[in-house]
Structures are given as structure tokens and as C-alpha cells.
Amino acid sequence: MVDMFKNKSDRQKYDREWKKRDYQKNNSKYRKLALERHHKLRRMTIDYYSNGTMRCACCGISEYKFLVIDHINGGGHKHVKQFRSRSAYISWFAKNNFPDGFQVLCYNCNCSKGYYGICPHQEMKQLSQEVKKELK
Image (tube, rainbow, N blue to C red; front, side, top):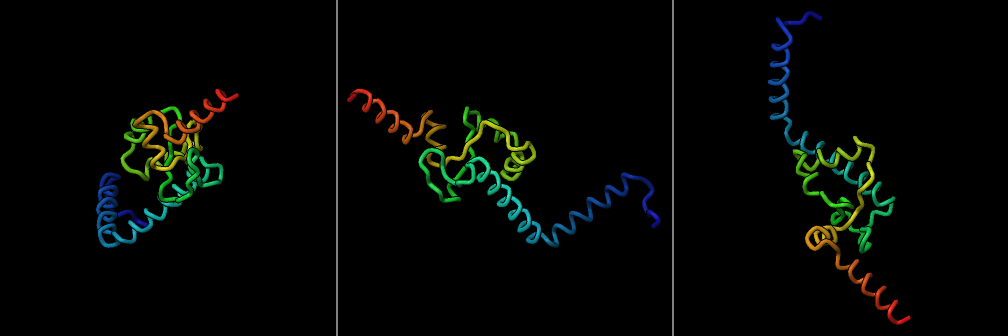
């Protein structure tokens, strides 16, 4: 096949324009595929970090839509801000072979941990353990 372009930059320019036109024509198809890919990666990531239970590590809630990835040692906000999208963030886990230092929490437990430093469920567990020790 004979290349109709004089140089590589002309070819790249044509390819960019073609992709832009194709995306505009098939926008809904591309969005649907991207969303499916995002949900597949998210489910795979949550499954991995929850050891297959798909539950919050703190309160045990199992509603998939409420589950999020938590940075065990903090720093999650800073880490998430490095990515241009939620999909890029979720893809990062698979690309980096699911590194240690993460767990699955529900949105409420994750927000409480971020805001107060500890989840109310953990506070209650600590208090009940202290009370048990005092009673012994």
C-alpha cells in the first residue's frame, strides 16, 4: 500500500482528525464502552482489595455502589489528584499489580476516617474492648 502522506507528522495530523470525527459520530458508543471498562476495572479492584468478599473492612456493608478504595496510611486525596479521571485512577491499580496499602471501605467509613481520623465503628470497638478490660 502506498502512503499518501509526505511525512510522519502529516499522517499523525490526519489520524487525529479522523479519530475526532469518528468519536463525534460514535460518541455514545465510545462512552458506553469506556463506562463498561471502568466498571469492570472497579469491580476487579474492589474484589482484590476486599479478598473476594466485596464488603467494607470496617462495618461489613456489601452494597457495591457504596464501596470505595481507602489508603490505609492516609494520603488518598493527594494520590487521587494525580489522575485526570476516576477511570485513570482505577486503572492505576491494575497497571501497578495491585500494590499493598489499600483496603475497601464504604463511603461513610472512608469519609469518617478521613475527617475524624477514625471511623465511629472502630471507636465503638475500642470503647467496648476498654470496658471489657475494666470489668475483668
